[in-house]
Amino acid sequence: MEQYPYKYEDDPWPDQDGDPGAVGYSLEPDTNDDEVDPDDYLPAGAPPLHSHGSPPEPRQAPLSQNQLADNVAGHLSGRLLYDPAIHEWHAPNGIAWGICTDVIVEREIEAALKRERNGFTYSYLAGVTKFLRSRLAVKSWEDSRDYLPMANGILNLKTHKLESERGRYFNWQLPHKYTERTECPVIHGWLHQVTQGNADVINLLHAWMYAVLTGRADLQRYIELIGPGGTGKSTFINLCTHLVGEGNTVTTDLRNLEQSRFETAALYGKRLAVITDSSAYGGDVDILKAITGQDLIRRERKNKDPSGFIFRGMLMVASNQPIQSRDYTSGLSRRRIPVRFGYRVTEADKARYPNGIETAMAAEVPALISRLLAMGPGLLDHIRQPGQVIAQFKFRAELETNPLMSWLHETVVTTGDDGSETASSEMYKSYREYCSESGHNPVSTTKFAGLLVDITTSRGIATTAKRSTVQRYFAGLRLRESTDDLKPLLFDHNPA
Image 1 (cartoon, helix red, strand yellow):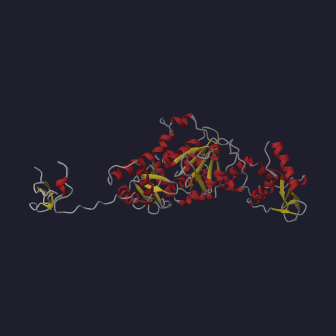
Image 2: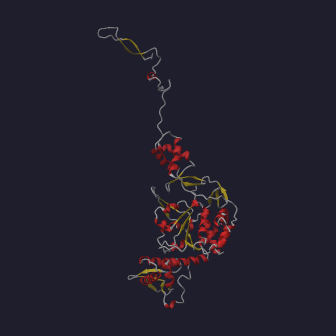
Image 3: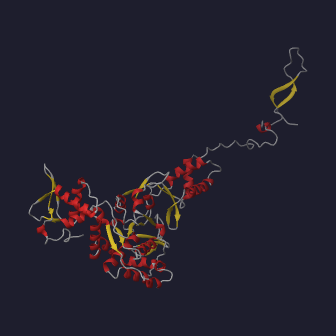
């Protein structure tokens, strides 16, 4: 029989009739029990409220998402990084860190969160993820030109020794292991063959590969490979692609690059951008100029917040003919390095390499890397100041693609120090007639004066556009006359 704390006894308070035999409960505690135990009131089989003789422990409030993010961040150290500049998560990929998908991020964070808490909703996971952005944010990616992240370590370009990646965060990596071997006879022989042994072109191509390898976007140049099919343009592009790896290369065309709002996003984190099949484009090249000028480029993706970045790689263009565009400024001309590929590979040349010459060249890329590094940054002088062969070809390519420059070259002469001036309207009329005869669209009158001064002064010809109360006129230039047959063409003295 269960024991109750109050004993059952005769009613101590008699009823109105004074009947002492009435029965009831006494409010006096049962003196047979030492103390009252609330556990005695629980149903049979129920767990006790607390251990006998000890007070219940206070319940701790659950950690907030903010607090829990501190603990989860510790579990994810070395597994995830967040780049606040472009709003993207990164995961380790060898020595480097690469952008990862939302699914991978959620899986990593969910696994770490389960170590701290049992059971949570998706919205709770999303809340913790937002707090983790600041905990796992990368301050900056390593962009020093003194290091190359390679498959077997970080190569110090000053000492040519491999170092640990500890403390450095790279968002790209070369796919090759560093070797001290520098022999690459197949590549060396091919370069001499396609350039027909021209030292100016060979030096430029070596310099370009060095710039691609070491990421010298600060040179603000792009190379334009021009020539018919089968002359080695694609082979050289593929060689440069092998140099930095396909994962570090992006291929596009001018139309998409200039007109698609999402195309520039593909350039982020790449070391090499290749533009193909663009000789007949003929439109604006503002994005191309921004890429090579290290300007901020918009990175926009569907259903993602837009951001901006600076392209740190090099740009190559391949076409059968020099690229046509509506940009006639010296800004584009200054960045452009056209190279003519004219040697046609013969069947006998192909027969020397049964598996293809590109396969043989790819095997020599690690040695090519060491060879280029041994040649050193002095190679870059061939980009800053190309040889005479490159300068002459660049001049001819610009005359072919810039009708304003070609008109100036053929139709205008300098006035010297005689102080003569020519009305802008007279010059523009001559220019329009030239465009009509050559099949080009003339620039507007509002752009004409500025472009004329830009083209001439950038080539060392002193020209000034002035305005009087009546008209505009140019000082330093005049139209060629019949008596000027012995005078040289305008840019013959300084084609660069």
